[in-house]
Image 1 (cartoon, rainbow, N blue to C red):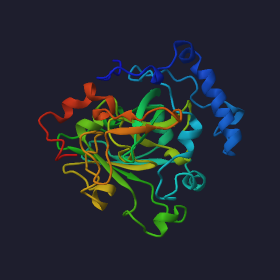
Image 2: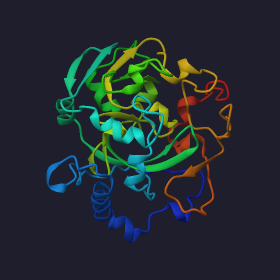
Image 3: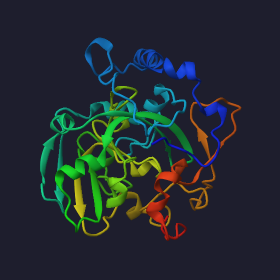
Image 4: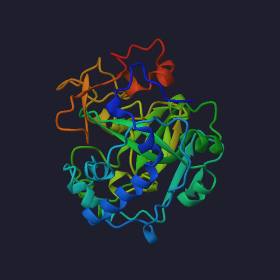
Length: 316
């Protein structure tokens, strides 16, 4: 299945065929330059990206990816800092190996599993997805990951499982904003309906640009739901719980009038303090006009059926 959008994709967003064929060479060069410039060393020895040869998913969009340097230095990680650049530096203190994930609730096979054991049972692929932040900026990110649904099926969900709750790591001794107990209730939590969680576009990502996930981008395991605003894609997951009832989520609990449970990208539902009908594509040229935001971030053909007969002005 190829990702399609309702609108014609502008030429500026489509990778030149020659460039696309040479993309992995370009990626390797960018990764090396980024490591040199940022002072953040490569995660694996020998400067070889850990997953440089993973196949590309047929769910990928053929778009120019945002330079890795931008993706790694423009992050919202409020456990560390409200500043997008400071969080990149502070997140390096988070230990991510070994890492385990608890799967519990309405499943036949609950338990706590080491991430490496989970990965041995999954087929990793590269998924190039649009990423749209509720703050009205966007990126195109080449994630490395596997379908969340593949993991959930191994846990054998019960018929009573209607929702999935995700919980981030809680380490106030390392995460300054958790220690000060500011803004949100910690640990950070998010949720999906079970059919959203089982959709093939929904990923558990462990890397990007062919390499291990940078800590500031959610290492070692984060959720990616490309048709929803970025805050739904919770970072550093330690618990996945299937439930009968909709879980409370961090931003929805903090400001339910501003951050809905569904948080589908929707240009027709403005945030109370700003419009959502256009976005600033990070890494584009200074004179590049803002991009018109698409319903469901351009993935409507794949996911609109999940919300049939729902009033998306109310269930935003």
